[in-house]
Length: 526
Image (cartoon, one colour):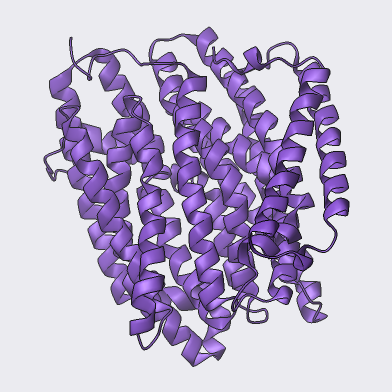
């Protein structure tokens, strides 16, 4: 069969990951610009707490109906149909899945609008003691909830494009989101009686822009869906069956953030904001590397499994795990060592004060501990989803949420009761530890059920990573000592020094790897 439906995948895993990461980098840079503008205009406090809660709810549901749970069930089935070469069956499947998804997200969005006060009360119970904050959060939630429907249909288009190795456009689409929110803050906020609502309207506008960009792109593949509603369609039922167990597993990180949101609502004003800003910094390496690897490797593993290529499946998974640790460990170490300088340089201006930088850095150090777990889970989840096993990750996710709740209560409650400043960092620490626990649970299940074994050379790989990490830490600490007081520098000088310290750490890490025997050819996918 000719055409994209039956065509062979183009390029290897490394090239696809590099393309996705490059486009994602643009999005993350735009995201930092958005956060800088937000911190400058609104700072960290009650109104930003309200937005952080309102934004987190549809963002969590997005993991279910968009790139998380839905994509994890949808992509393996789509890949299997594509491998068969039946273009008519593939288009019929896509039409019915698109129709079912559209109907589901419209219903959920409508219910969210009606039940917004109940949702806020459940997610942020501490706000019930502050009627003004509770009312603002409810208003913001009603504005942003329809974003769920828009971003879910956008994610469908992105999943189709990713399955055909068109990674660039879906990866760069979030740039529109960030630019839309920036424009809303700069242009709309001064005109509103409640300026923070501009953030919510910007998010909603971003949903429209993203859908308008991605939906026509499917037409160029000859696959633009015609929405057909039939929940009894075999393809819809199959995706639904696979999707149900993933409701927890694909969104475990978001679930843990929801748990943190509930606890943080009981703490002092600003706690939600500090956690929000530190999470945004952690999301940089996760989106740049973790999501990129998970997105690229899922269709690849699905094809290997569909072709019964067990050797290729194992080799690709081993490559994914090696690459994850190669990137995750320096990312976690770098964020922890540069936590306060990052907060000072990126956020500290306008309404964002020095105290906010200190509080944000505390939670960033704690949360960065979980980065290797967060990133490894992306690859490990793809290993299960490619085999259309969604129940095992669900069990791991449920256990992880229980672990997170227990850790959050055990760590944060004494700090809260003792009125210890920075109690929110206990929530971040619990989130990071739960991320590591989730990865370990998935790894253990994969070894037991699939019989997966690591390829030879892992001991040498880990030793190289350890030596290179020591080199990174030494370089960053020396550079930080040379800089001295970051607040003594201003404007472009701050940015230049931060970039120089990051570059020194990256160079030391790279040289440490090369000196210990690692070679770039090891990055080539198998």
